[in-house]
Amino acid sequence: MKIEVGESLILSWLRHCKNCQVVQLNWKPSTSSWELYNEVELENLMAITGEYFKTKYGLDIYKQNRSVLQLLNQGEIDALGVTLKGAKIEEIYAVDIAFHEGGLNYGNKEGTIASVVKKMLRTAMIIYGYFDLTYGDVIFASPKVNNSLILLLEQCIGDLNIFMREQGYNFNFILHINNDFKEKIFEPVISMATSVADTSELFMRSIQMYNLFSNDHKEKKGFPREAASLKMVEPQGQDLSGLEEVKIGALVRSTVRRLVDENKLNEEMIHKLTTYEYSKTNFNINYPFLLQINKSETYEEQRKVNGRPRYWSEIFKINEEEYYLCQEWFESNRSFFMDWLIKL
Image (cartoon, rainbow, N blue to C red; front, top):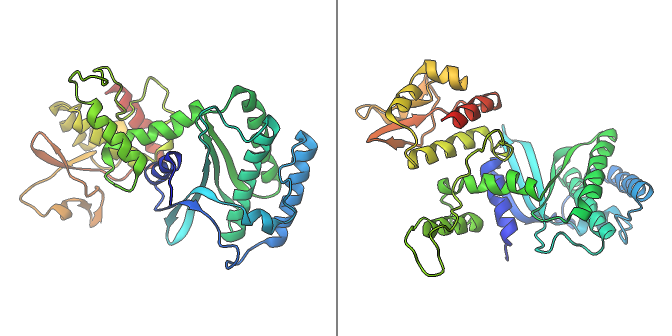
């Protein structure tokens, strides 16, 4: 099966930034054998959304599709990711990615916008019809969309969100295009490159290979010293929008790996990070940020506090000592961590 570079990028994004335990590329429902839920509601949804965009924008989003079954049968999702908790779907992400070097193009302006709206609506219908879910993030991603399309496209997707909420659905229809694509998808994935060792992730492996040679500071013909390295992205000023896309636990672990690899933590800071007081004040966490491992005791038991593991099993080696990293992070801790990182 051929895998496009954009799809491989989204695979890594879903796995490492969205923490999806299950991700599949080029996902397509088996319409001939699977049960279709909510068929009557889907037929109605197709009818009212088609009329809405025809009336308000003059867009014929379904064109030759005359039935919901025909529409769903044509559907394929570039990347589908699911996060599970307690044997239930907690979050579902359905992403379509379009990488056109000349800019997003499915014909003329109206045809391109109609195609994007149709893709996103069909994806939501597939989730509703085959997962029996009325929620999920439906994402259209493209690194290059020409200015002539952006305003109308954003208006249509904004109206789509409002219209679907009014109909009782809780899907989030999201555009990640141009700089938003760079900040919220591309850069967060690049920031994880040093911490992923999965040979199946082609985009990630290509970045690692690039870094391998770009870090060689010797002058070579066709490979100048100043060649840019795609290392972990560090926050610049208050612009943290890209890192907000990374789940807080994954963000903390990948950042600490980088800080350790680049020797950014001096002895004074390491000592502070092993204290409860500093950790509570600076991160609002209930355990020391780092736990120094006593090599004469059982490693696994040291991860536990009152019988429960509070530290990740990954071992960080710093100045010949070994440490565990606190795993008790919540979204409420994100701003504390980012403030600390900026000041470091």
